[in-house]
Image 1 (cartoon, rainbow, N blue to C red):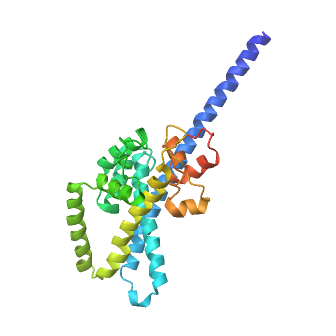
Image 2: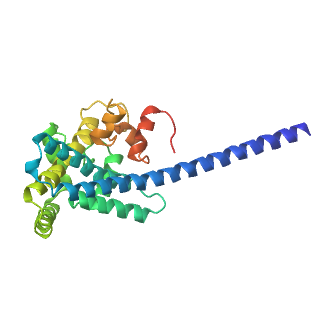
Image 3: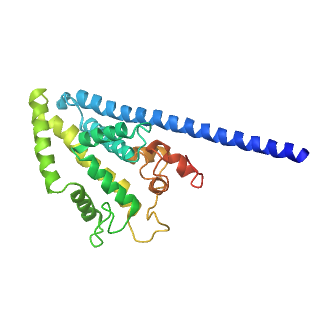
Length: 270
């Protein structure tokens, strides 16, 4: 009799623990959904607001340091557009609906640089499946491993001849359409839109590809290493993309949760 009661008690406790775990997962997923769409909306709104405000500013009224600071800020926000598309590729921007999630990612990547989302999905999937190998489109070609040569190879793999034509024609139309249609000085567009796009590509490559995957000695299947930057520096350099081993280990985590994985590398995160 006592044995039966004890078994029932243990079974009940086990059931309660399972129920608690289920609700914890639901809560965490809901939290990620809320934070995912909120962070994406915040980045996009800041990018758009600064673009509207800064493009009309009189450059003569600004010091060279103010212009440089604005360019850096715009570069950071432009990188944020790519981060949105990157997280969307992992399904973490809008978890309840993959179609909406991918739609957000496609829009962010188009605004970032008129890039095709489906091709990015394919390439990024290969990067995670075959990191730092000849099947990884983000890795160097095995011969030209210097930073500049690797960067050029990295860019050409994402922007082929067809995409180069689309980018040239599309950006030309957009540039002159905005310049003429909204009476925006060409220099403002060059400094606060075109230059941040170029700098952003370098930022993403350096902190998200070159530093994590350079060299030939790796400890495990991810073939990646992480930066030792502080939380603030990690955020400012590339939205915690420098915590790259953690990203490969937990690809389902959005960018703002990577520091948690960095803090608890052995913790099983949901």
